[in-house]
Length: 75
Image (cartoon, rainbow, N blue to C red; front, side, top):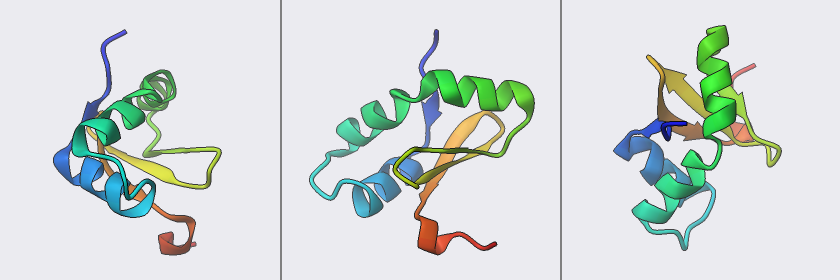
């Protein structure tokens, strides 16, 4: 399976919101660890993947474009 495409913005948000000690490369790798879920979401036309930790990977055109925290989400 081809790894999910992760934008620089998404990697930066991962470092800011999920793991402050992660490098950009670590952030991309951590997000790409969810490639099976991301691919399934894209196939079903979903706009996000909610992680078990409560964070959400936001998708646009099959790419991970940002990472949101639960408190940042508008209901």
